[in-house]
Length: 582
Image (tube, rainbow, N blue to C red; front, side, top):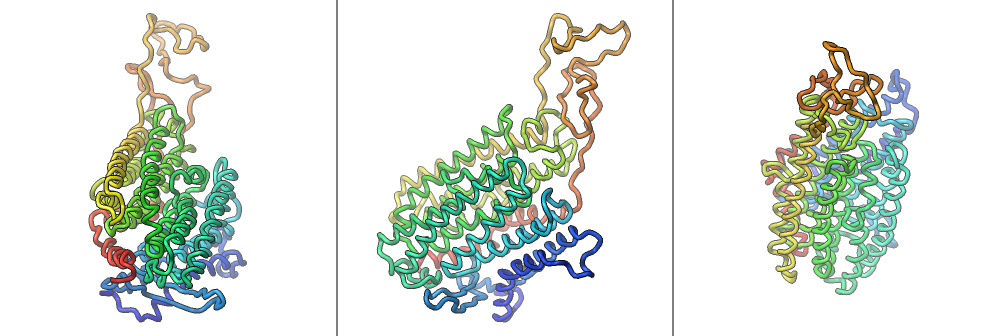
């Protein structure tokens, strides 16, 4: 069934435009603008160009999804197959199925929302021309990763995103941005070198680099030893990008230093490339090798789930000086652990759960980074102790809509039933309860129990964040002394006031240290005269609502109607796991 009947040639053009269009837009962004399009502000003109290009790509992706044959989601559609390097049998082979289509639409949506957000709030840094061009190159590489069906083209697209993200962090990031950018590029490049060797091994030993042919062959053309080596090499490269514990250490630094748009794209899109590679390449092409490493992959996954949650709890506790962006980054390590656990089960239930969790994480964590960026812009910091150190910081009282959205995203991230985060984690745990034939059921049930414990830890740290940031914290009661008129600070003596003269409360700061509007201050002690209420913060702005509303709506839609996504992925997953047989 197709919503609108679109001819195959138009579908081919749409997919090609989705992949190549952002690249052409990036080139155009660097060229001088035509006289009629310069406007009064050249910077705004190039940012508007970014919105236009990403908007056109999003429209093309939506039309492609509307024209997709939903009755046959396991069949590759909108395919283009052209010989590129005959000597190596490398082909420009594009196509989408029920696995890649949701990721394609998610990438186009998030990139458009980031461009729209940046138009109204450009990131502080060098010329917007370079910023827009880098975002468009990043979008093109990510979309190509999900659309290409040739191993070498997959590698080229996979690597294409590294340089744009490096510069986005290095030039438009915050503190420690250079160190974070170098750590990001070194980790991912080293992983990619090993992955390339594995891809070449698979292609040369099987006689083809075509992913569809490899999936249909289902590893029959590769010996078990070759499959084991290939899974080890390719899996290491994919695990760095995912990121899997203990190869994750680049992620918190990158997220903390990256601008808001960079964090949204990194969490919402780039992390999905690694898990997509596991599903698209390793599961169908090297099933025996995957079966060998599946228990180890599952073990690393559940360690990542618990480790990420414990790291978040440590950052969320009072006095830890934890950065809210860093906390959300560590939460991604835990959430992607569920995705890897689902893949390791090698069952339709687990893999469908992994794919669902992929999309849910992109929506929810993308929204979280947007919101944390907005909080940081308003307060000038993302430090949790600073944000939660006074009742005046409570978002519910000072920016109620922003506080409500942050609470919504937090409960969606912890897997509240009825929202998108619930289904992926639940299906993943169901898959671990009954893994594929040949895998140890007791071991995977142990992994399931550990993963379920991780969901409790996730709920704990997310609720702590909501309580501290959205509700604020009350200071401990002031220490009682025999003399109520004694000064509150021994090193700041005060002269006693004359009888009948109003006295300044002990907890009120001296005039020299009085806060400016928007600066946080400690609450008065119990029983002391109340200070004037803290000034209101700017609540959700129209451009912010425009950028965030689609993510909220899709989070609710996927939670209430999961069949929309599972109806696409399940037939394609069944076909991949059965060796290309529908």
